[in-house]
Each structure stands twice: as structure tokens, then as C-alpha cells.
Figure 1 (cartoon, rainbow over the protein chains, first blue to last red):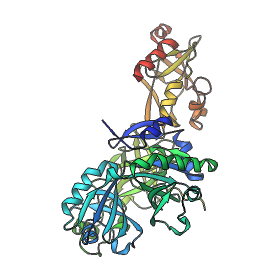
Figure 2 (cartoon, rainbow over the protein chains, first blue to last red):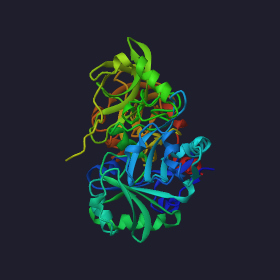
Figure 3 (cartoon, one colour):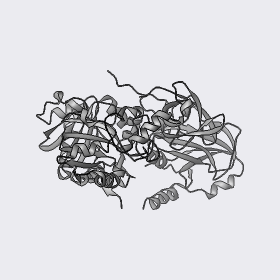
Figure 4 (cartoon, rainbow over the protein chains, first blue to last red):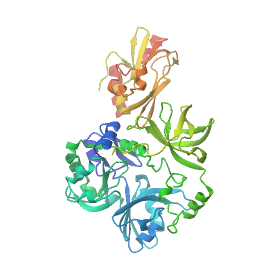
Length: 361
Length: 129
């Protein structure tokens, strides 16, 4: 049976539509994906992301151990700051993409994807020499409050001065009487916060935020809107856009691969791949004709399959078909043209700049 | 949920309204609700043949692609073209403005094999159990 978050009953009470995702019974939508999507872009939305996992590194060797397993450079991450990056295998394949919350050099929380909870813990625990590594995934619930009015809503519930918490920074705080990690992070491209709290307080926090945001038009949101929001930003989704057979360089994540920071698992393979040049790259594209490209559809050049679509939808904010695809490096430049095979038909596509969507100022 | 008595229904959640020898075809209220926001529709052209039980097009929601299955055999004589620019009409008004195609029916006796409103309602209740 699929696992349930502490908010499952709240979702059912709110008549959310529940689907199984990565082994979890999760709300895919409440009122509707388009409405929830628009609420996050224009006002605020609240997501249950308690299915995400948390692995914590502690002790004098915590920082060094995690540095040796992480592609980004945690020496450049201050205490109270978060950093995005990848865990890689020796061959450069991506074990997971994660956000590390550096509470201190001896206390780092790694937020991992739901479907990778057990795999990541085994991977990290087995290689974190000298550090105390704990799987705290069941000890944390996680709520994401996202959207331009999110900060205004959250400020009603906390004495923490949110204006002093910068992007990708976090602090310990109390929200609606619940002790939380209050982090200015997210997966939507909007300003917002992710709150890590004890599971038994999750429903209280959830209800308090929805009440506090009622006057701002807050909406509870499901995984459907989470996916369309992240795709408009071209944020990669593990399992769809990347996995153990793709490297961060191919996935367009070179900006979180710091080859000069010192040794880490996968560094040599990634260095070699960078020197040799990439044979394929993940690109953002739009279709030049009506249609929707979906995960798994072939990318065609001169009628022959040369790549694969990894994510696609009709952008709710822009009203145009958008997607991500692995294509040969020769087709990766902005403006390059190829076709996507949709139900046997070759539909014209071209590479465009990402993110597809730019936040309103 | 609404299932008009004057329609016939398929187990794939299409409806069909017979006007003379023309069948007007769309998807049910239950289907549009289950699909969620419909953002794309692909329909046949006028003159194309359709066959009972076979695919005549697709509807896509934000998340998924679903095939459309014809309740009858015949030839497409009219297509609801405005749907291509306003596919949300299918969510808003599945039985009237959200109709998809009209088919000249080859064998009207085929319609007898479809479900009536009560039969369809029972079918989806059983399906949900």
C-alpha cells in the first residue's frame, strides 16, 4: 500500500483528488490544476511536500563527508544557507538532485526526492566516512507556501522577520505556534517558503496558513500544479528529466558541478565528459504547431529518432506547448529545429531559452 | 453529476445524441470531471470514416492523454472546430457546446447496443467501487 503523509486526512476532507506518486498517496489537485497554477503565479498556493525525504549529516566530519558526495561546493554555502546540487555515481550518473540546508559545519540537512528516500540514505550512509548520517524522513513534514503573497501571509503567523530571510536562506522559527525550519526555497519559480515541521503539527500548520491566507485568495495545491509550475521554470524532475543514466552536465546542471572544489564521487567521470564534449544535452523547446509533447515521445531529425522528450505540457501561464528533451549537442543551440513524434505524426519544434516563464516584477 | 436521459452512452465515457441519421458525439460529465482541465483536443476531419469502438481522436488534460472512442460507425459530417481554440468548453458544457463530432450513421441499429442514462450511471458507480 502507498504511504501517506500526516496531511492525508486533510486532503481527503478538502475533496482533493488523490493519486499515487513515487509510492505515496498524494493530492494531484483540489479545485483544478489550472486554477491552482494561476493562484501560485498571482497570489499564493500551499503544497504538502511531506513525501520529500530528509537525511541529516552530523558530527565533526559532516561537512567533509557530504562535500565528497555532492557536486556543488558547500564551503561556499554559509550557515543558514541552502544549496542545490547532485549526488552522482562514479560514472557521473545522477543518484538524485537534492537541496542541502547547512545549519552548521556539523549539522547539514539533505532534502531528497520522495522516490529516492531509501536509495539516497543507503548511498550516503554507506559512503559518509566518519559522519553520523540519519534518515529523518519520517521525523519531518514539509509544507511549501509559494507565490507573490506568500511572505505577507506567513508574516501574520510568525514573529520571525521574513524580510531578513533572503532567497535560499533559512532560519529556525515558530509559525502558528509550531517550531519549524523556515526556508525561502521552492520549486515553482515564485517567491515563497518551505516549512519543515514535526509530523504531528503538520495539520495545525496547514490549517493555520490556509486560514491566514484566505483574504489573499490562497489555494491548497496538488502535484499537478507543482509539475506545471516547475516545468515553466525548466526545473528538472528526477525520474523524468534525469536519472542514473544521465549526468548533471547532460542535464544542463553544470552550474552546480564544481570540478575544482576538491574530490567528490563522480568528479573524474564528469571532468572527462566535459573535456570530451557532450554528445547530448537537455534543452527547452516549444512546438511550432498545436499539440502537446509528453515524456517518452521521440525527437526526430530527418525522420530518424535522435533523442527523447522528458517532460512536456501546455504551459498554463503562456498558453503554448513547452517541454524538455535530450537532443544531440548539434541541435542544442537556441533556435535549432527538430521534430517531435506525436502519435505517429512529426510535429515541428524548436529550441528556446529557459526558463520558459519569467516572473512578473 | 448530470446524465441527460435523451443520450446514449459508451463504457469509454462518450455520449451520443441521434438526430435523424446523424449522431452528435462528445464525452460525458463524468469523463470531463475525471480528466480535469482539458487543454488540447485532436479531432478527425469532415469526411473521415469512424468505426464503433475505435479511436477517433484524443483529449489531453494538463497531465494526461486520453483517446476518444466512437460510439457508432459512419462518416464525419461536422466537427466542432471552436474546440481547438477553446478546449475548456468540454469541461464547462460537455453535452451542448462541448460536442465534438457529428457522424452520419451507417447502421442506426448499432445504437441499441449503447447504454441508456440509468445504465451508464450504474456502470460508473460499479467502476468506482
